[in-house]
Image (tube, rainbow, N blue to C red):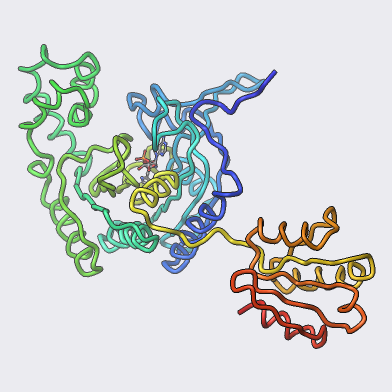
Length: 420
Ligand code: HAM
């Protein structure tokens, strides 16, 4: 019996893991610089949490959720996204007490049952920000600028930030009505999904990939013409703040987010040359969500993106994340006395943060040096009989092939030398 990885998932192999570590660390550091703290929630939650927040008619809930019933018949789901769990944890742990606003970030796997393709997986890793507690447009711009500067800092160039406002619940109602009025005369030309959308969530029609629906949608009314005064002001102030923060954006009134909880600001960062899955990250305000899941009315805004798409975009743009780390030093010990002399130092070097390797299964000088080459080590630290007698060692630079003889003591000199 040969076992296989589940479709739509992948292994992160050691050759790639340094890239993951780099992009994860960069996100953590930037989020911390903006004053955000990490929050981790379970990878499964009550299924109803997602139904209530993302919307029962959303694709994420209707088609993509991994549901299961536990031994006591309770309905759970592997989390398809992180916003509702963070909002649940915020309410359950009373994170509103003590601090007017909470700045949270998370990193972790999400699960969606969808047709796998490049950039779309059934288990994927999101980085996300959730800011809870203020409706000030400053925070809209702050959250968006974290995303923008994060992606820029990784060396990505072909980025486009698209911004929209989907208005408050009242504006959205007017707009839905306008869309229904617009699409109804074309109902016979719509795909079966859009026929349903027309009644349930007319805005989703704007996002349909079917050619005939797309053609009709081209002349549909714009969301921006249906914003009331306060939503218009909020949108204008958000844009102003983004300009002040030097974050370039384009307005796209067609942005429809796939989840139901959005109000006002909605945004996505697109990487043009990434094929069908070219949205690197997306988010927006969700001023109604906390109340919807049982809390008080508390405004909030956030975003999430998939690390996989970042790596694909980096590859496409030929941006590097530096080199795969290699050993600083590979120890070559000839004979047991040399080995016995060097073993305590191997540990010393490692504890001093020097990447040090040694292969006890290889005896000959040639085999050990070959192993050092194979591992792409920077230096070989060679100890033979002469070196044991003279309490010194040979340090060979495996790039330039130069070598020098150095005394064991003081040990700190070796560490300093290898660190540079
Ligand atoms: P979302 O647009 O559904 O939003 O997902 C955000 C990002 O997650 C996408 O732009 C994409 O990079 C990545 N992503 C989504 N599905 C997949 C998949 N199947 N495979 C690989 N990557 C994927 C949310 O999840 C919201 N919770 C974002 C948010 C936070 N809104 C407010 N706060």
